[in-house]
Structure formats: structure tokens, C-alpha cells
Image (cartoon, rainbow over all chains, first blue to last red; front, side, top):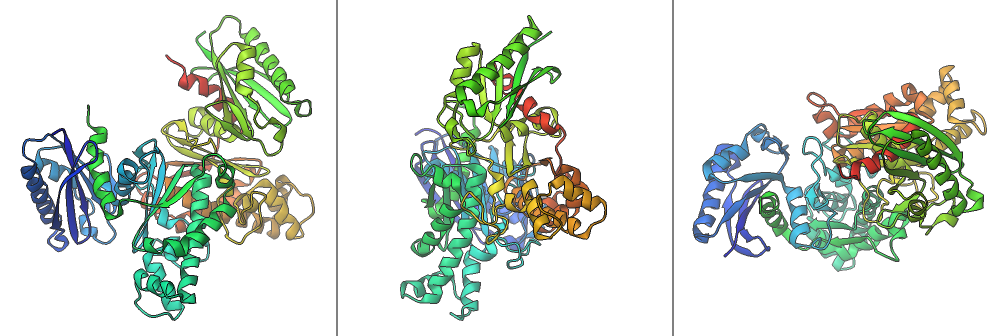
Amino acid sequence: MGRYSIGVDMGGTNLRAAAITEDGKMLDKIAGSTPIQAGPDAVVADMVASIQALETRLGAAELAGVGIGVPGFIRMDTGVIAGWAQNPGFNGYPMRDRIEKSLGTKVILENDANAAAMGESWMGAGRDVEDLVLLTLGTGIGGGIIAGGRVLHGAQGMAGELGHITVSPNGYPCGCGNRGCVEKHASATAIGAMARLMKLGDNLSSQDVFDFAEAGDDRALAIFGAMGESLGIVIASLINIFNFPLYLLSGGPLPAWKFFAPSLLAEVERRSFTYRATLGSAPTRIEPAQLGNQAGLYGAAYLPLQSAPR
Amino acid sequence: MGRYSIGVDMGGTNLRAAAITEDGKMLDKIAGSTPIQAGPDAVVADMVASIQALETRLGAAELAGVGIGVPGFIRMDTGVIAGWAQNPGFNGYPMRDRIEKSLGTKVILENDANAAAMGESWMGAGRDVEDLVLLTLGTGIGGGIIAGGRVLHGAQGMAGELGHITVSPNGYPCGCGNRGCVEKHASATAIGAMARLMKLGDNLSSQDVFDFAEAGDDRALAIFGAMGESLGIVIASLINIFNFPLYLLSGGPLPAWKFFAPSLLAEVERRSFTYRATLGSAPTRIEPAQLGNQAGLYGAAYLPLQSAPR
């Protein structure tokens, strides 16, 4: 067996790790916990245990390194968590160095949405392109930008905050300080909020609203129509900015693709002449991502493979 | 004397060319015409004559190549003009090959706004950074994105159409098919249109409106305030997307910086937590460009130097 690497997806509650070969075959998987309340040292200890368990199972195969998708901002130069809004106790924690020290192998941290974008680029919907944008629809909207086959990080590793693109200058206020952020108009949370405003029900999930839409409920269909319009406005702007060949969406609301995609694509076609200009020759692709919640595992695993000497 | 290159700025009416050394010293300049009506062959002939005149004057110095900033989209792989909206007769014209054949030297075509962004990156306000975004405010709003010291082109060379970012989903209709493009709310033309709507006067230039603002006219000040807000919304989104260290503005309305910058910066500060997060350590710079209408000459000249073997 050739070289492999281990990709880790560190969520707010669960931790998953997978051993993946250089050509993208997942050899083994393991799940652990993220004991947030016990603090960063405990989280690292759990993560190291999971990684070592995988390593032991893989035996003599050569481990190229470990990539870890982490919520929040990472200072790429130092491997320090710089901004995890939900768990500020982790901010400033030198996570990369602590894990490297415990494991004795090369570790690369990456923002989780960036890792997912890299996963789609390596083994998912973006296998055949070098440039793509991924929007992850969840509680908020995350984003990852792959340019020339690499994550676009920006000056402080904060690039790709696509959920905070303004879609409506006087739209809903956002915790980030802005108003009309697209994540307030098109995330899973926003779908639930619109359901409440439409008197479809309180505390509905995007899955609940999807079920209403499947049953032909006009209000549910209107919600997905509005969601699609907001996404379409943002994706049209992203196409005008990047002229990349591929824009992907992932996350909980994706099963409702058939309900929100028509208004999304109509907005894009109307609002982006770059999109229209290339329709006849090399159409810009706007598609669901393909790897689901494994995108982050693949992307994290790819990071040490990408930068390792061959 | 060491190597030099020639940068050309091909406008809709005028043509300028400059010989610039590897370390950014402008040795000589020449102006010509762009005889659009006579067709692309005549334009090329005029351009070649200007370039050869410069070459002759420079004598024995080694010419590394010629870079040409051209309005519209360029297919970077073929050097063909793919979309010049104002002069569709040039579309499909193999301009690079024709010029190369006449000159017998390496020629690189580039979109004019991209060339200006590269010029600012090389010798202007972006000398000390690798990543920047330039917005050029004129009849419309053009844009150029420099990432890792190189022009970001996208799949068909159409990246950087920043004037068509949606700033107001139901704003003014734009010839591109969209509504609320930032260029309909913040270009020199938009300033004139707002002046008419404010009954400040018909057919006013951005300079005229600037003069009114200098005289303390409330309507003129409100126009620049609105312009700044629109630019601020877009620049906040660009910061959230790119986390680049530098965002530049150039063009006719720049003398009014003191009138539109306050509302621009207020919007950015409110709408981009990335901007706020880095204020204390490495503030994101939002500034006027430094090279004025010579940015395109510098940027075009840099292209053959950047890609030439050393």
C-alpha cells in the first residue's frame, strides 16, 4: 500500500477522522467526540487518540501527514485558532503545534468550509477543474474558494466569508454587524425564520419546510423561491468577480434543490452577462456538491498530500 | 542600460505607449491614435508604428516584450479580442498574433482594468503587497484583481467585472441585464445621473458635481454620500470574499475622495467583520490608486517582464 493521509473534521460536538490514500480511496474511518467544555487540551487529546487509533489500524503504510478542518479562522502561518465565534475559549490556542507535538507528524489546520471546498475540488464535483467556489448552507453560510487548485486564504486566512456578502443592503440584521447578509436570507436557519414569518409554523427545520413544499404548500414554495433568489444574486456577483467554471452548494437544504434552483438560476442568468456569454461554449456550472458531509474529510486529508514533497 | 519593455494603453480614441525598465523607470513615452473606424488592421498598424518609434529611440537596449492593455475581454490563450462591447467589429480579431508578426517580438494582451491593477501592484499603491483589488470609476466601473502577484483571469479571462456586482437588487437597470449594478450607482456616469435626479443640472460631469460639493451644495454632498455607500457595500463584500490587504479606487471621480470616502468607510466598517477584526493588527487598506492614467502603461509593460525568463 502507498502513502496515505488522515483527514479530520472537527465539529462543535463530533469529531470524525478518515485515512485516505493519495489517489482518494478512503481506507478507514473513525468517530470521536469534541469535548468542548473540557477545553482545548481535552479536545486535542481526543483528536490525537482518534488519529493514533487509525494509524495503528493502518499498520506499516506511510502516513504523509494529518489535515484538520476546524470551525473558525486559522492563522495559517502559526496554526493558531484566531476566531471561533461559538467557542472563544479556543481563540489563541496553538492547536497545530500541540497536535504535531503529540503525533510527531506534520499537521495542517484549515477552516472547515475551506477544507470542504478542497475536498470537492480533489474528489468531488470539482475533480476536473482548478477553480471553484463552494457555499455551505447550514446555521449560517460558509464558503471556500479554490483558485489554481489551492485554497484562497487572503491576508489573515479569513477569505471566503461568503455568507456575509450583502444581498439586500437593508435586509435582516446579522450578528456580524452587517444587514442583509446572504446567510440571513438563504441558510437553513433563514428557511426556518421565513417559515415562521409565513406562519407555516414555529421551530421548523429546512427539512420540515421541504416536506411542506413536497406536499405542494405555496408558502413553502415561496420560501424556497426567495432563498433561490438571494443565492442567485450572490452567485451572479461571484461569477462576475471570478469567472470560475464551477459554483457548488452543500448542506442541509440541498434536498430542496429542485425547489430553489429555478429561481437561483433565473437570477444568475439575468444578473451575470459573464454567465450568459459562456452559455454557448463553456457553460458556468452551478451544482450541488457531491461529497456531502465527507467533503471536509477528503479536503483535510488532501492538504498534507498537496504540500508534501513527492 | 538593462532590459526594458513597452507598455501600451489602447483606448477607444487615443493610444499611448511607454518604454519602461525592469526596475520601473519610464524611459520614454509616445502617443498615437486609435483609428477605430478604419478597422482593426489600421489600429494595429498605428500601434506597431508607435512601438517601433519607441524601439528606434531606445537604440541598442534589449526589449523584453510588449504588453498591451485593451478594452474588453481577451482570450488569454489565443490573444483574441473576445468582447469589446463598444466596438464589436474587433471581436474575434487575432490582435496578439498580428502585432507579434509585425514586430517580431513577444506580445501579451490584457484587459485594460487588469493592466491598471497590475501597474498599481508593480509600481503604485500596491508595491508592498501581493494581493489587491482595483476598481476603476469611469463611464462604468471596471475592475482588476491581483492574486499572488498575478492577474486573476478566470476561465475565459472575464474575471474582475466588479462594476456588475449587485449593490441593490432592485436598483437601476444596467445594460448588462442586471439591476442595481454598482456601476449604475457609483461610476462617473452615475454621479451625473444622480445630479440630474437631484435637479442639480443636466449633463453635469463628476467634476462639475465635485465643484458644487466644494461650494458646499447639499445635493452634491448627498450624491457623493450615496456613491460612497454603494462603493462601501461592494468593498465590504469584496473584503469578506478575499481578505486581501488592499482595495484601490481610480478614475475621474477620485478628486472627490474626501466627499465620498467617509460614507464608504463607514459602510465597510459596519458591513465587514473581517475589516473590523484586522483593524488593530494589520488594517485593510482602502485607498486612492497612485499612478493615475499611467497605471495601465506600467501594468502592460510589466506583463512581459513578469513572464519572461530571467
